[in-house]
Length: 113
Image (cartoon, rainbow, N blue to C red):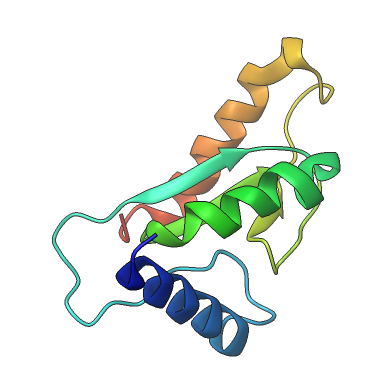
């Protein structure tokens, strides 16, 4: 990566650790917020936190204006939120989890993104 990417990654991680410790949904603060902002939402579950979710946080999530990982377990450090939904946590029931994710985004971020 370039120095700008390295500096941005370091800046986000420092901000995340100092300002967002104990809070959910890390949102990168910017001096000049544009009219258009991007909220990245990831569908996951707790067994993927140490691998896939951590990889997303380390590689691309910091580039989003806001990041949310809809999961089966809340992990504030990774931006994961336990989102209950109708039915079981199975591949065949993905629609119910997706509905829950969009409802959560609507209820919590409609005016921000």
